Length: 401
Image (tube, rainbow, N blue to C red; front, side):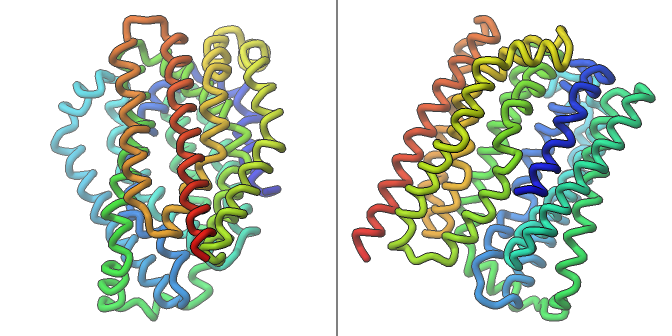
């Protein structure tokens, strides 16, 4: 948590500088770029990275790693071919010419994101929490240096996108060293790759569609804002959302990794108490932070980032209930992987992804802030239902002990 806190604090600390070096339009192009990357980055490994935690033998885990790597290469190369052939059509679909040169960087970024997910889970399996934290710190420092340097040179969206790519390269290098030290790559065999692919086939069958839906939700929201409003509004939304997510991103990934590690080793009858205690402690410790954001975000944004970013502060305030509940439910989603119930997660994801699309389409003629407020309330309600579902399922396992 300490390392992750430092890693997340760095981009937050330089944000007041970045908002003066880059325009809302630059942030909008970057948000659109990351929206495209997110769709494919989360599925780059066929979701097999989630299975790395599960086998008892490291030899099986490294073969799952190899399986995810192969899928990642295929998806990234396919994506590159699609962009080369349909570049102009994609631009028309996105309704944004500014992103034209950056489309060619999408396959590389997707590939690096996929590699990071594989390395992240393998290091988590080895309980290398300290090195995971260090990798995140190095990632933030490298990204900050690149974005600041290119920002002073007035590089525009290039600075933000380059910082993202460089930071991923740095973190991947750090995490790869740990995996290489184990000398497990000699145990990679075709027959074992195929065997593990069949054993954990529910991940691509059920979790992959769920990941696609999650990626589409994040991306479609950005694309719809760009289409119905403007790239500058998207830039405001991007900053507002990133800042309100700061508390959750600060320690959220660390909590999720440790939570997943804990439930992976726990008996099914113990899951309900683990989940209940996690929810209660999370609400107790973190609700005051989100309450402060909800009340003071508009004022803070105007002072810290400049008056032109006031809209971002209002967006952050309205999104606080949604982000807080998402902070609680994100680790809880691993329960369905632990219990091999990914189909339930997929069903919920369908509803969770349809709501934002319907909200924007039916309310597109309304004021943007009103749309965000309605979206936040609707998504918060769905996440509350999600928590109830998790409690019911884990309680049933306790009763059966």
